[in-house]
Image (cartoon, rainbow, N blue to C red; front, side, top):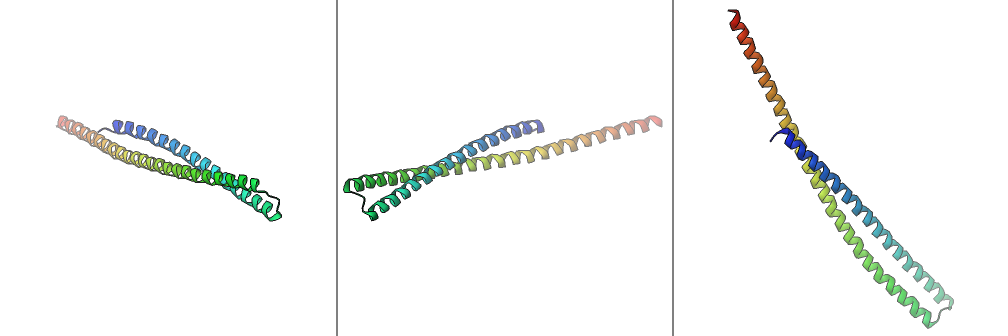
Amino acid sequence: MTSRRILRLVEWKELTREQAALEMKKSMDMLETQEQKLEELKKKLSKGIQAMNRMNSSGQINAQEVELASNYMVYLQKSIRKQEKAVSGAAAELEEKEAAFKEAYKEERALEMLHDRIRGREVKQAMVTEQKDTDFHSVIRKAGKH
């Protein structure tokens, strides 16, 4: 393979790596958003429990309010479990995107190294050819003088 072909592959892999980096960034943002939603739900549950405890300790709560608050707490707990699954899924997706990014980076680096090696060989071969031509012309000049 020539260095030009390898260089094209390097450029293609660079684009692949950049795309993987963008996808990884999107996954990071999604995970952050999901984690924020989870924290908000946990705060709501905590505040609800505190409010219910205050009302219960002051004796200002009736059975209907207890049932309503209890139903709301159950709803929040279900929402928290659902959101924890969403966070877990987003974290798994991020791991996949990170792995794809790392693989694209490794492939790009390997192709760059191959390009450098091939380019070095081409330069060395050009130097050898040039030296042979110089030697040939030198021999012809010497032969022409005698």
